[in-house]
Structures are given as structure tokens and as C-alpha cells.
Image (cartoon, rainbow, N blue to C red; front, side, top):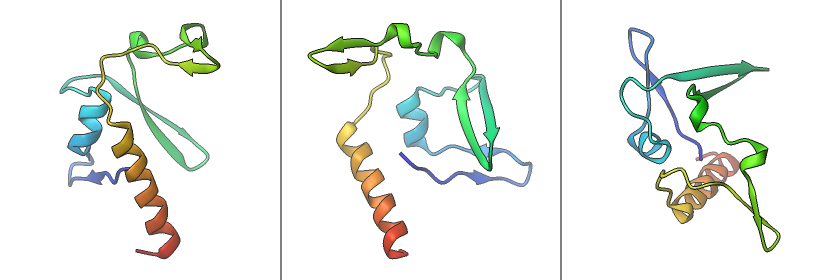
Amino acid sequence: MTATLTIDDDGRLTLPEQLKRVFGIKPGMPLRAEVSEGRMEIVSDAEADVVGVDQLVEDSGVLLLPKRGIPLDAAEAIRADRDELASRAFGR
């Protein structure tokens, strides 16, 4: 999923509602920015939200993540990624 963030006059980032909903971000929730090689990733700072390799489950050859209670419309996420890639490819 790709989203465009905006920075206000005070230097604050505004997250789109869809991102907040998908990742369960609530006001006051601690987040951490990890920066490396020209990239910035915003991650939850709560240790409880980290999924370790030992928490993955294999079922019929498919790795499954544990349920986190975060609603996700996979079809919408795939459409959004496809549209983002198409817009970059065709310069829209």
C-alpha cells in the first residue's frame, strides 16, 4: 500500500484515514520513524505489535500471520498498489 502524506506548517505529518484504519492507529499511539538510505518507515513503537518469526504459522505450505484485530480489505490493497504502479509507469 502506498499513501501520500502531507506536512503542515508546524512540521506534523497527516496520515490518511485509510492508513489509520488499516493499521489501527489511534490518537496518542506511539510511532517510530526508521530512516535508512533515503527511506523512512513509520512503525508502531509498541513491542506488543511486533510479529516475530516464532509467531508465524504454516498451514498447507502457506505462512500465516497471527490475527491482530486490524481489518484489512486485501482486494482494495491490491487494487491500490496496482493503480499506484500503473500511475508511475504511465506518468499519471
